[in-house]
Image (cartoon, rainbow over all chains, first blue to last red):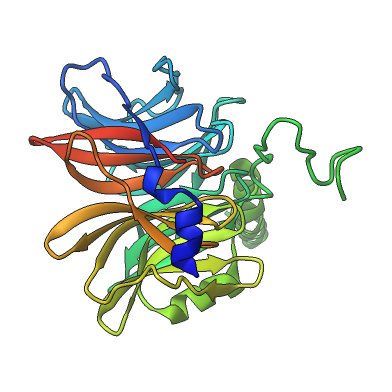
Length: 173
Length: 168
């Protein structure tokens, strides 16, 4: 049945539209850790810049580089993750000896720092497209684990255009 | 200092210390709240890494019985859902990404000495290889929330690049 469904879906003639994310503007720098915004209009990736792993935000498909306010001195950057419209960029940064989870709100310019219990070191993260939840993979106490956090008290939702905000006047219940 | 003065100093110090936590919390603003019930279930499932969160779905790689496997969790029901046709006991998952409907999963895995990128469609229970052109070795993958495009990190001739691939 699965095979039949696959055949009916036209898998034999699937064509994969593909393109490179393009030059990053710093020679032939490595580009790693890609993350697309929910609507695909912003790409975050990590490039080596002046010897330091730095997050790069680019509009798609133009490649125009988007500014970030707070992250310039917090390298190395790791594991960027974007909300639906790219309003929120969550990532791991280095502050002194500590690797920390931060979220930059590109609409307000605010940087949110998310504290973790002392023994846990964040390894990677994933922000839900609506900005309501965050998953963080950590190492600590001899174990790797994934934990979820509710961000609704911290962030406004970042939703597709035209989608009502729950709880807003005139919004869906 | 008189005894009364000392008492006043101690009282003031206690009041300041007591007021610090709410004052600091006010400076830091609201904090993210751990989803305790879900986290306990995730903890019980075994060591886990490489999360991908989208909509009400969480994909991650869980170690169970000495083997890494992909798990997709329905966050509304707080339960993993079956992924028939995705798993192979001889495959080692490296990176996984899920779309906002929990319908499509992009997966990088090692199998028979190769590292490959595949797309899994849950409603079809079917796995489709995603060829890389020019050829390269994939590592981390990310999927748009609407599932229509993926971004994958690819090693080619010693350099890491990012490919964007539209999905049919």
